[in-house]
Image (cartoon, rainbow, N blue to C red; front, side, top):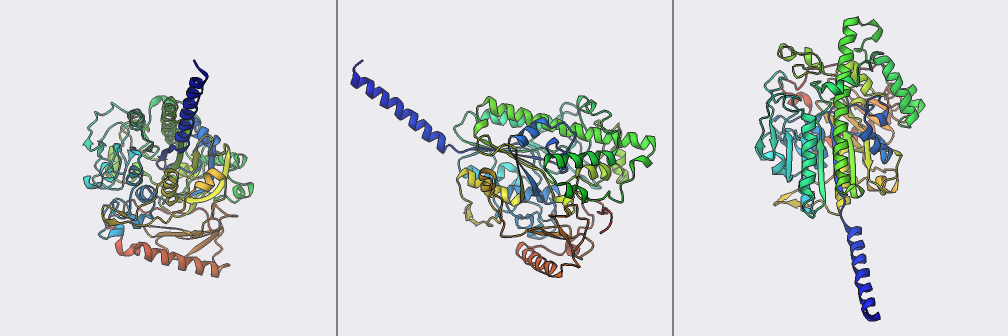
Length: 549
């Protein structure tokens, strides 16, 4: 081989290498967004729990955790904000997935609010969804019609885990399970729904690997939402784990949260008092303790199984050699619930035909254990106190996000869509299919995630759902809980347990934040709840208290 020929070969090799490097540098990252359902702030090992969540914890310890990340307190409004990047009323789901007769409360996503499926597909991504939809029951509004290439899951609010029987909520509640647009009719006791969600996600990743595109996977588990139903081998892992009761377990979680750096000792000392409707564990009868212990054992098993599924998805990611170019985000849709489903009405009790955890049972976690799940916060799902709207937030991206990071954050669901679009190198369109779009109110978290910079918000964060209202600006949080319209004010830097209402001491702050709230409410089409309240509320009223102010 001549010297000249050797030089030509060397130049070709170097050119190919440089081209490959350039392509690698400009290759768009994959994105996996994981959401679980009705999981409290402290239910992960990395946030203070005794529940075994090693795969989620791995993401946390190798990535970043936020101390303050907010949802919209209940399933459908949370998903509306998450999927579109809009406040829920602006997206059309201000109350739930039921139509109350006006656009902000129509119960399905409007055309002016684009889904991340629609935006990311235009940016060249494969868009995949496995799990729960809950933002449009009519076929015109299903995932395939809103930008997703592949879909498997349940259209409505939830399902049993071993069968597709209707879920009685005081009214017929049909369960629609789809693969793409095809209705599925699985045989009872032939599957466990959490595993089905996992298996389809893995299948979608295998299929997507055959095309030369980045992917966006939205993995939306229904677990650990009631009914409490789990696989026997998972339940067995937690036998005896909750014999000490909720008072002792909450103290253990508080101590672990301080040790992990999730909260400070001062915040632990100012944690919310036990809700007045949660009894002293030591005052329960033996039979009562047996039932309550069984509930939490099953709840833990359900979350454990979801974690196992996440482990399978991460293993598939590694097998496909895409783990080094994928952002993974993990959140929950709201705090743990207060609902006592098994004893809510005669129809519900009639369905509760088996031991807790089995296919025939229809139990829920209930306030006592949700009080533990929401440690150190006050209140529960559907309310605007911290226990209803606070979620763990974990972000993992090897080599891009500093391992072991914990930040304050003060972020919200509306911030995720602009973060994904920023990462994908695409912009949110001003028009889509000839329709002018609602512009995004959130803020990209890119600098927080990838540069370690504290998130700076110029605009407050707002909430309204079924008359429950709140504003968060800096350290201050203004909140009112329906049917009361009086404002409470809390200094969350000192008091995230919301135990000391300081509204009377800070009237100017109350005045400033309330004006901001009413301006936001007008801009987003919020209507006084008494004027639109459905004749049959979604769930029965329940008190949301935690000691006294």
